[in-house]
Image 1: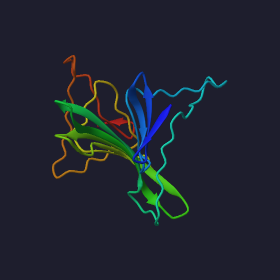
Image 2 (image 1 turned 180 degrees about the vertical axis):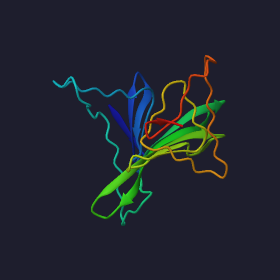
Image 3 (image 1 turned 30 degrees about the vertical axis):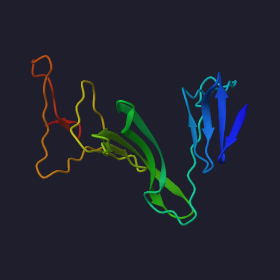
Image 4 (image 1 turned 180 degrees about the horizontal axis):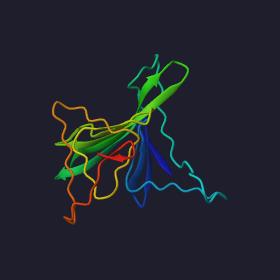
Length: 168
């Protein structure tokens, strides 16, 4: 069962602490967290995990909920290896719309690499490379010296640039 020590609740399995609920409400788990729930649905998403973030004040843009990923660097030292955040990019007080922000860790510091806005715009912090098709309603290059490089992988020069349905 459990043990209460200093306000924390510890859960043991086979003599080892497997979960702790701290006095401040934070929970830690040793091992994997597996959540499953069987439903009759076979063609829809089942939300097995809900993360909620509330505030004691008035929220504004930038407010949100995220997941931080950490990995062992060496000798047990944990370092942030990335974040996945959902943060408000529109917050009217009665409705909130959010962007999904991908932040891989660079030397332990989460750095924004991709932002998918609530208006369905994608912002990339680095180069975009693809070996497949890249399709978009609009492709806007905003940089002091934007460059488009087209490389034909089989060297037969069969790529085309089309503008409004016609060849460029």
